[in-house]
Each structure stands twice: as structure tokens, then as C-alpha cells.
Length: 82
Image (cartoon, rainbow, N blue to C red; front, side, top):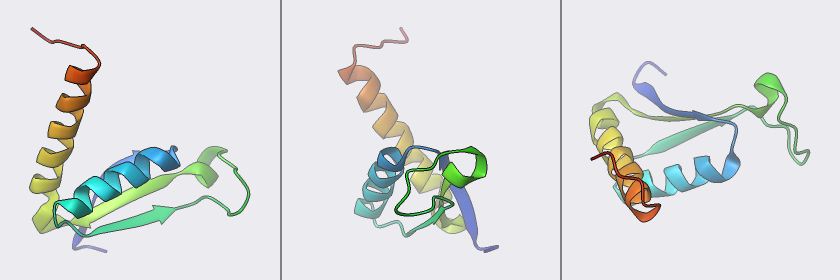
């Protein structure tokens, strides 16, 4: 997977799905590598890891999309850095 770069590491399945959907809506291909054992909701150590990867050529675009998503969430929550 040398053509791929990790864009997200999480234990939260919902977060992983949201980020995947947002990136794919921006025409970025996403690969999900989940260590979760289905159908059991185990999140102990490595068994709970979820990693999202994008192509290296899309990494900067993906980071910009995630940054914009975080900025929007911060504004909606009333967080203000200034």
C-alpha cells in the first residue's frame, strides 16, 4: 500500500464512516482498514482500531476537506479561536 497514506486513525465507527463519506463526496477514494471483529462490538486495544487511507496524490486535498469539516463543526458548536 505504498501508494496510500493514512488520513485518519480512530476507534469510533461512526466517525470513520462520516469521514469516509465526506471524502468520497469530494471524489477521493478511501480504503478502510478495521481491526474490529464483527458482529462483536469489541474495542480493546488493536481490536478496535479503524484506519482510513487515501491515495498519496489525494492526501493534501483530503486534509483540506477534513480541515474545512472541522472548522464548520467548530463554528456550529460556538468554538471561536479569535
